[in-house]
Each structure stands twice: as structure tokens, then as C-alpha cells.
Image 1 (spheres, rainbow, N blue to C red):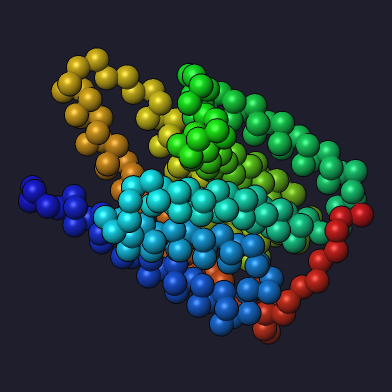
Image 2: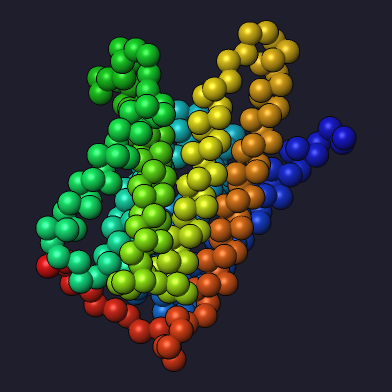
Length: 258
């Protein structure tokens, strides 16, 4: 194997990911999907921005500054991703009565929160996590980003189950944009959860095992990036076409569940 093949693969995947995200944003804007899924577009924009800044600023800024910028954008992406799920749920399950909506939301949060407590990334000691210092604040922000991402992944899988079970009874049936976005998000979520869960089970006992895990981790991360690229292509293709029965994409004005 060529000594620079892994390095080249990383940059190839970065280029494809960045280009696909730009194309997806063009589709969202050009096909009038932006009005229907503003939070989904916002999350893709934040991911694209973070990807670009890390590439452009790495080695050009002090490490602490770069970490602060990247972590801030990552935290904002987590918040935007939570609103994406709310956006999809509201569109996909419009008409659900408010008590049912509250019960479903509470149940999903309890299940996802319980799972996060088990498989989340939690420090063994909290003494280095303090608002008193810049490093401590950055560690808190990184902890929020890591576990926030995992919470989003878990909630995404739960939302997908609801869409599969009840989507046809509301507005998240087969071939709707809501369901297609959820399918892509769920694929990405399952890949990320499997990756992080598997890594937690690895406990090297020698230098050789540690080196093997490092190499394996790189391959798994690249595989996870490929899954994300596939999801991007899926979204581009699906959102380019109108939903069945509609001549053109028209903005919907949803109301809060009653």
C-alpha cells in the first residue's frame, strides 16, 4: 500500500463531502425546499461551515483558538439538529393531539436519555470541567457536543421507528420528503452509534494492540464518512423531485399540534 494512500483517501472523502453538501444546499434553495425545512438547511450549513473552517484554519491559528471555533460551531450544530427532529416530527405528524404529542416527546426523551447515560462519553473526573478557565469551558462545550450528537442520533432512530409505524396515518408516508430525510438521518445515526459503541468495547493491553486499534479506528471513521456521503446523495436525489401528487413544491404552514 502506498504510504500516502490513507492521507489521500481522507482528502478525497473531504472533497466529496464538501461538494455534496454544497449541491444539497443548492437543491434546498433552488427547489424551494428551504422554506419547508429551514432547520435541516441550517444544520447542513453549519456542518459545511465547520468542515471548511477546519480545513482552512488548521495550522494557521493557535490550536486553542481553532478548538474554540470548531467546538462552538459543533454545539450550534447539535442545537440545530434537535430543531431538525422537531421540524420533521411536526411536519410528519401534523394533526396529532397535544396530549399525545407531549406523551410521545416525553417518552422518546426518557428512552434516549437513559441510553445516553449508558453509552455516552462521560469523564471519570469532573475536576477539569469548570467555567473558571478557558480550557475548562472548552471541555464542557466539547462534552456537550459529543453527548449532544449521541442524543440526536438516538432520537433520530426513535423518530424513524415512529415514522415507519405511524407515518402513513399522518403526513410522513412513503415517498414524502419527511420520510426520505428521516431515512438519511437514521442511516447516518446508526453508523455513528455503531462506530462509537464499538470503539468503547476496545481495550488494548499492549502497544501492538493499541496501534492496531488506531489503524482500525481510521478505517471505521472513513467508512462512517462514506455513509454520510451516501446520505447526502440520497437527499440530493430525493429532494430534487417533488412529492407524488404535487406539481411543484409549495411551502407548508404548519401549526402547533392541538
